[in-house]
Length: 399
Image 1 (tube, rainbow, N blue to C red):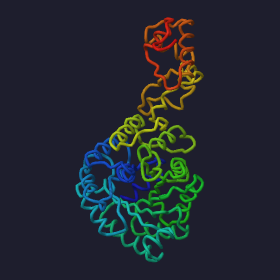
Image 2 (image 1 turned 135 degrees about the horizontal axis):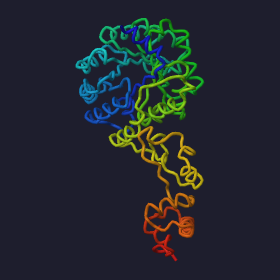
Image 3 (image 1 turned 135 degrees about the vertical axis):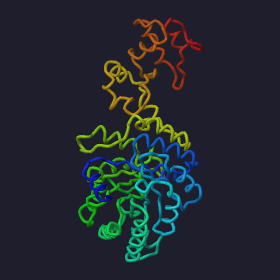
Image 4 (image 1 turned 60 degrees about the vertical axis):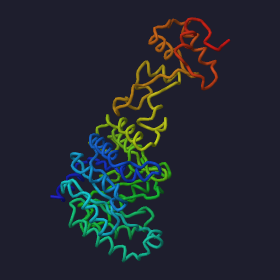
């Protein structure tokens, strides 16, 4: 049955979103979540249509275990996974945390450092010992879970021939997903695609597995690398809401999703996300983690749906799509806001005057435009100030 499901996913051309906000995202300094807060986010992710959730790292402590236990049977249709080192004790701890979750909706994600740096300095193991460790623990996990993901930590700094050996061993021992992590974010789109092709071409039995891309944003390329991995054949993308995570963060779920949506012809792939949930989801994660949203954040930053430039405002008023890549309702965003300021044109000013039931003839509009251009920066533009300009009075405090 597992082979049939995986084969279906690989043939269907559907990109599966695996969210790791609740584990990798929470590792961002200051972004700690309580179990009840994790459940709120998990439910929102489920409603948005993610395929699976990286629910936590049981070996990290009781709070992670409690969070996972709280999510069991509470996020319908979503696979819950727990992160594990290549230790049998980690796998057993995950089995306990996930015991109330249906078998077909739970799994483990194993990771093991494979690069020379990790082998020599962290694990202090030879290549042969690393392969033995992978074989032992993947076999142990496959005896207990239907869903077993294996990721070669620091994969993109691992010797290609040894990386193939690591994934070949994992597949032979029962892994259902091969996660490809760019652990320190050094990939470019070209190399990201190359690593996926390497797995597809050289790992025996890889067609029995899903390939998952997991990219960090240290060079600002996590989303681009994720898209390149999809184009090269990855079926799963591992992302976080808002791109939160360690150091410069992870690939942003909402940015990957919208990019795929707007470029279907290029990627030839579909997805099952409800894009209208993305902006509210981003705001929820920001609220609960305390991580502020940059005004320039793609998809749901405040400036995405605001414009002050007169040319853009004029174009928008004539047809919204002249200066929008997509309408805000696609992602559940607010209506476009025409900001009045030094760069505003007559069209936006006239709209605002009408909203305030003020004179909006050419003379009144011209007075307001001139007033806006004369204001020092950061001066508040109040409705009272607009009224005084529109009727030909000096605004309070002006000569």
